[in-house]
Length: 111
Image (cartoon, rainbow, N blue to C red; front, side, top):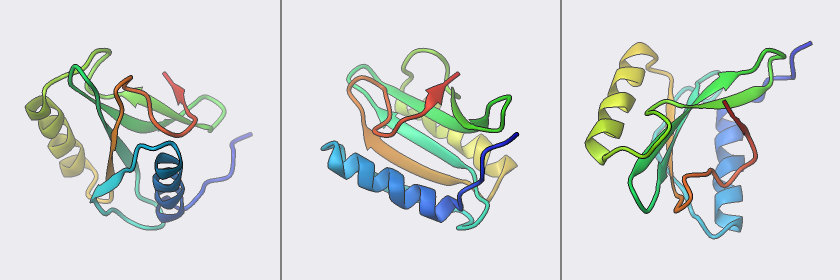
């Protein structure tokens, strides 16, 4: 059984509020489809950048993949990854958060 899907625009608002609450204010770098767009989350760490890509687990729950790899990358590599993903899916949202530990300000399973 899959979990209910939340509209992307609503989820983005929630993530931004959680970031504010956690002292890590985020910003929308790119607006996607408010109803069905996917989400990329750029995490700005001490050692570099990591981009999380929204995915679904086996049970349909929201999960996250480290799209740019296990470790941090430079900004150019992150930008190239985002550009490829947007070319593939023009409905994507792109959010950015300061994240010294390369973890998002919201709960989520990272695969």
